[in-house]
Image 1 (cartoon, rainbow, N blue to C red):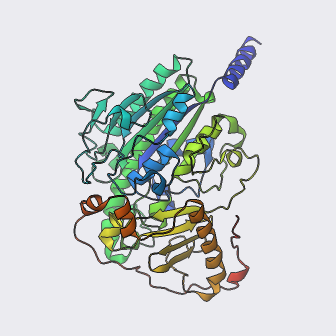
Image 2 (tube, rainbow, N blue to C red):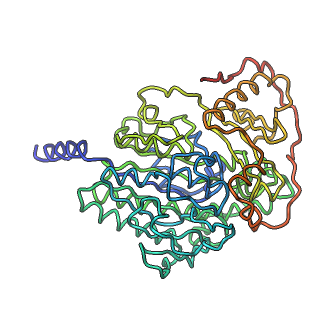
Length: 492
């Protein structure tokens, strides 16, 4: 009887206490099916405790643009971080500052990557980040960008001298987060904590040996859309990539165990996600920023104490980086700032009713820079629904895929007459989305000039251009009664 009364008291206290929020996100962990080969028991268990989002995307799938959107609730053209190593200006009302105004302690651990040099290049990647550029995070153990995971610097709050994470940085960062959670648990004040890992971003050879030992290269299944001439390189990289992912799975366990040990599971919203994927030679491409699944699809799982009855279920919302700020504020029952462009998906997540919106997420790479520049791919806009991907670039219609019948996107339907109705519907959805964001699809050169990004584009550091074309041509897929399949009706 006494035990039941204590449990009831805890439940009532939890209901009255504001929800803590923990965001854990990896750099370059893609959400495509091949990652199911990875040894990730913690993430598998976490998915059974939370809600999985199979259609989550990184609409502008590169580190800095994604992070700018996560922090501000704005799309890249709204916050101005359009390329890697650009700087997010302090004028933006951030997710951390919003939680802070609502009485939350705020903390950030790990990679930042939105304090780029004004003239481009990597000059600030290991520099201390001034307080006004930390977007409202009080406790700070961050660094701009470093992918030497076994010799990784960080700056502690306002200390101008770098310290170094001990060993593999993601492990040390996760242990630090666990200690910080214990400290927060001793205070009645709610907290907003973000942990940003550098892996599984390349270099792929640098995961701890124990995690490399989990994989045998000969047993790794290469995605079907990796051309034969790239398969050996892809196998080598995937082996290291998956090793990093397994290491991060144990890091996630460290953070989740700390929440449980400190009795915070029932009043903490936990988000696990990533900023973008990596092509790893799918379609003959490397890196990211492309509109293909390996680049734009990301994992997203939200464990929401108020949605325990929905644990293990899926939500098909096409959540993108700008949506995380309004959605997490909604889940925490906090007022939405007026400036955000992303959507609050709270009611869909909690199973109350579907949102009044299409199921389409926006794909947008406004500037031909970085990987696009490397491979000669034009800037583009597009939409990804639960079934289709449609993209047009500066030359016109470019890509149309049915991702259910063609999950590896090897059948471009853009010139298929039987798919014209689907293409037209998706084009209308795209136009509506661009109009809402005042995006006139100006040329890459116009946007570069407007945002003074000439030096940034010139200093991408990726080397000489590599000639590339879509390797599968415009093969015609068998489309028997295609017009009878699912289409998408635009909504105003």
